[in-house]
Length: 334
Image (tube, rainbow, N blue to C red; front, side, top):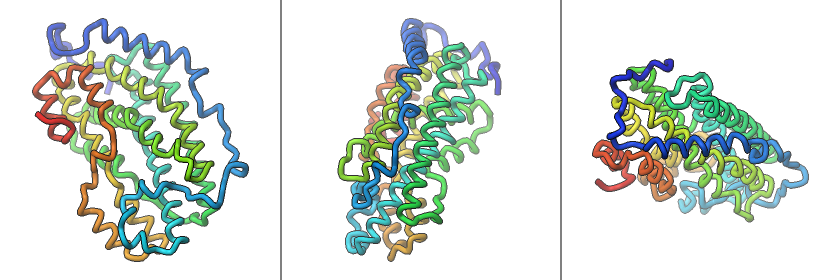
């Protein structure tokens, strides 16, 4: 795909529902400020956590409330040692999903911008902030990979192998259904946008949780500090992108933008099934099947108001197509 993927005769006119030139200019000003402040705002590379000093063997690695089967009798009745091993697996899954998001969703999205493949994001500031974000994500991957290695070593979970997260699987399935390369790119970008809008809240679940392993909590907190900026970055990039899309591309983007919400909110039962089997958890099949009877993508588990606000700013929810798209995904009523 290249810069010519949008035909000039499909571009929206100034009378269409969209961002005004003033609103787009504000988004670009935000991006410029964030770019110029990178050295001061980037947090992860400033922190080198000392696992030996922070690790507390007496504390659990993960929060029981975040387990999809936290109230299931099989888990509640399990021996304490097995429960702790399950919680350690939860911490590994939490980090592996984070690595998937950074390396397979956000990283490739930034690369599309860096190679000037995205309309509206071919200016120097957009390219620079995409490259900075790519560096941030590399540090995040290093940070959480180290955290996983510490847990695997200390909890004797060296051999645990996790499948890809549901989020990645569904994004790729959606891309495979696309007939055009530009559609695949917009699916990638939409998934990155949703992930970056949500990930701060996702990380917030553990960053302030004093009952868990201090090393784990501080790892998440260091990561969260950067992601607060990334949310603003991707919202501003989205505004610049959306303004530059043609009619056909904009309608496709409206359709696909809300879909990753369900992918992100999924309980990751395939990942849990694999982990529980590998640690010898009794009644794994029963537990997973019982969880499947629930809503695997329970939207009550996440706050998607940020995405609704972004769609409102873009003018997506001022159109029937946009309203229908968000309503289909259960994010709002028609």
